[in-house]
Length: 64
Image (tube, rainbow, N blue to C red):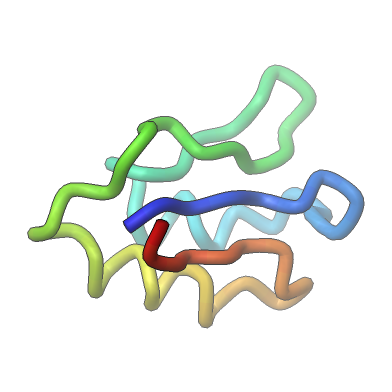
């Protein structure tokens, strides 16, 4: 699985980072970004939850 963060939609709430810090992190400007190229299988469900919890719907988790 792979993840992406739409920088135009991200408002820096940090829900994704709080939910799955192994996959998402903050930029120096305080917005979310993806920290890994591929989501490890054991973190896939947590990454999907992080996408669901984003209030701006800026996070996408999908199969490549």
